[in-house]
Length: 387
Image 1: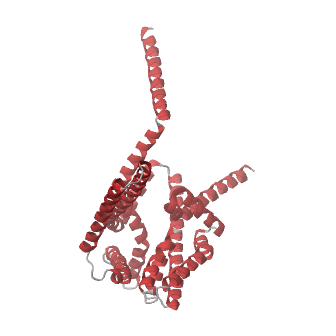
Image 2: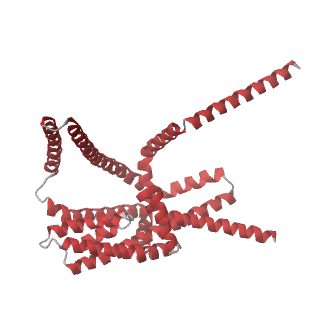
Image 3: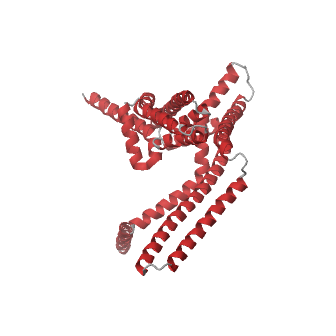
């Protein structure tokens, strides 16, 4: 009897301790939610930054896998190679992509950099930037001294000093933002460099990782659920690949139309500027502005500077044509979405997550459509079985 009472007593004590703990945790979560949420965001950002090379490697491997399969198929079927075709095809894939990237960078340099800074080195350019920052600091010190030495009233001096400080603070933030941007670009380059190596091994050992995935997931779920999961993953992959193909085709059409139009105008480097506009076209709203920058620079540096205005008008007209007709038609058809839903998805995605939201809005809309169809189909099947 005594032992039974002790067990009941211990059970109630444990209940009280557990309830008190839950109340304490709930209290802290509710009244410190902002701080808790900020800490969670910081932890998530730190975790993502740690695994960012792996994420980039997976993205690169996903994008290059179709090309490597095409090259591998060509080596096996046309050239009748049988030894290490996977490794050879992967190496050739990277060579093709690297050569294309080098050609693009060199073309942009020849188009812009060679025109502006033909005799400038990086050290000279950075020295000039440092001189500008030094002069900018000296200018504000000079203006503040002149205000202090002027015969103006104390109130006017105070207003002027405050205005100067605000302008100085704004410009300082802008310079710091530019420096942070360059630092961020350096970090992206480093992560991308590591990601390239990771992607190489992901492609090279594709069969190993595929087998590892199947073995791991099969231990966690039944075979029927495992098959449904794989089917859904393959369908999502079809949606993403269709979106990528649609975006590439859309960029190609925009690039060709822009190149032809700029050639008719007689602008130098028309093909390269059109290519830049086509590549920038994958970024909604901001992309057209980026695509106009090379045209403005080359137009201003040309013998007829008014050419810059005509080039910008042409590129903006092409972008309007693309946003109204070409993109909704091509991307919508490749995703199985009506153009109206494509436009709505881009608008909603942009309002929620900015540029990244606009980039991912269409494939996310396609995935949502996939799950809605599955839910409706399952519900229809259930109703039919009941009848």
